[in-house]
Image (cartoon, rainbow, N blue to C red; front, side, top):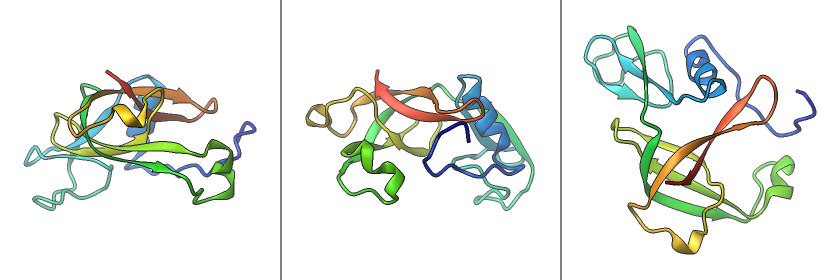
Length: 135
């Protein structure tokens, strides 16, 4: 994939709007068309009412750190050159949590509630990944 040697997600009809949004610089989340529950990661069935009807909303792109880890062991050899890297779990105001790598954040400055915003890291012509940056 354009010289990018890391593992990449597979898209499905249920996740394609999420990935398309990232390519456009937008964080899109699924919202149940029947009960209104927002969900992330994208999936075909609402875990609240079991509906398969879905809408997509544009998220604010802001959030607060819930937890973090500094990764020192590559789960796949292609990530070895990135070590160590910072992974954040972030509470979004839309009511879901999201995981992504951080960029430009000192782990020593983090605390629960640290404000962050989503950034968009284009890794190939076809793939943009979300990352978290200081807000």
